[in-house]
Amino acid sequence: MKNKRSLKKILAPILVPATKKYLQQERRTHFLGLTLLIPSGIFHPAFFFSTKTMGKFISRQHIVNQKILEIGCGSGAISILAAKKGGSVFCSDINQAAVEATLYNAGLNGVSLQAMRADLFDSIHEVGFDLILNNPPYYPKDPVSIEEHAFYAGKDLSYFNRLFRDSKKYLAKNGMILLVLTDDCDLEKIHSIASGEGFVNEVVYTRPTLLEKTYIIAYKTPI
Image (cartoon, rainbow, N blue to C red; front, side, top):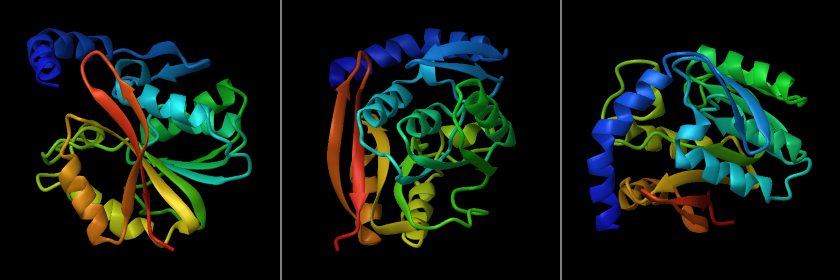
């Protein structure tokens, strides 16, 4: 892991500016069998290992007729994959441009879903979700723009306090939260926040990549 962090530190000054410049324009991309239009300022699934990890995991699950909520849908890639697998999908994002991109991309890929603008669970009226999916921000810094909400979870990771506290009234009796996290974030603190709200966690999928190891972690409340 130390070698991977060293490599990330070496590559970051090159890759970060190049990626930001590339993403300043609207792009069309192919991702796990989907065709997606990615507007400027929207989280691009092909540039981040986390989205591919969640996408690969969801594509292998039996979720027919399950009620699914994705928080932070971005371009809609994960929600569209879940809908293609037969899930009844609701999704949200704090960025209205992401909501519009998701609805456009759903039509482009021939699936039906519901998308709305919301800050975490604000404005979400549906309940009884079997799965809540989230590729969360996890860097400990306060976001200062809409785009930064995709990366920064607040200085004290307050995003996770809200996520675990508020999710309980939206989950079905046997429902769970699935987060995609990496060895680059404070897993111990995130688990501690979840535990404080009565959740237990289990790593259900691991995917090593060139620069980091990504995990799908299930959070459930004991029955």
